[in-house]
Image (cartoon, rainbow, N blue to C red; front, top):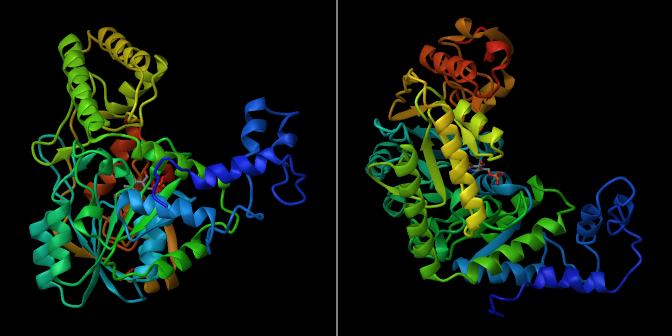
Length: 478
Ligand SMILES: Cc1ncc(COP(=O)(O)O)c(C=O)c1O
């Protein structure tokens, strides 16, 4: 079956709903009827699709009918060997990919600025990570990911490597050298996992950066919900044709980290998202890209606001990294936009990040443009530049001071930041969003990272694992 207009899982739900069946099974809202008294009718309507694994609706962990067909259509669209539906976001995709690929003690090259789900996966699998520093572009402060050349060098110089995990594109939409990275790692027979959470739409047009799937990574993880019309937590784990990791290994790992009652609402939305994506033409991508460029030019001309692009590498047209107007940091700019009822994805020291969809209405665009104009006008009088922050220079290759096993057994204590310099972190410290730990669990804490985290908080950012400016460390560390 390869008619990409079909949505077998979604259609099976519709068919079941048309039966007017009596639910003598979970969930307890009974086709949404029990939502009616306390909540809006929209909840009641959507509840009808929140089904469970009853006759006719298949089984996510041993699919043989509609879920199998829906997953096959997704695999056929993405040209993967198999595509598995995820109901816990790329978070569970990353966890399962790592658990399926590696054994305790395996040595894995890992891009230093990966999402926290990758780091949690490494710890769960008890592997030995060897971190590779990303290139941070001096002019923009954007991470360009790891260089293929550095991957090649690390492969040559690190004996006993089993795999590599990289993120591409970054949260901010930057992709660079993913094909070359995959090729370099392949030469050394490594298992290759790519967290492509933000690139689920890349295959729809060559106007977007290339996907790691084409490059032949063993496993690629996509958050469908980030850029496609899928419900939050809807994601895919793709296993490529010549993958060294089997589909069964991935499915078994997923059964360990996901609910045994997967959401049919989320799964059906994945079916819908794939059909939507498949309906797009290559040309649609180019048109969208041109339209985004025109919009940016028009806003820049009107307001003087700057759109940030890395000097090298490719930028996803759906991501806008906007420099805050003079006198505002990214969080203040974010708050000012929110007052205008425009909610960005995030703010940081200097920027706000917008994520567009593959189809945005002109009304929406107008509202965004007007909001930016109003904010810029309001803030015009400000003179002070926002002081830039010192960026952290990571060693090009680094390892944890203690293994995850040693960390698990060690005694821990919470201390104030100034007592933590030189100590081993017993928990990650993570600016959120974007959810990339600045201090890794198991590494020695530096004064620079603490200073940066304090500034992050002082200027309005949120940090996990740094409550009251305290960190959890290994006590009496060596
Ligand atoms: C690079 C990256 N990987 C993985 C994730 C986790 O994705 P999800 O929210 O789908 O669980 C995120 C979330 O922001 C992310 O930015």
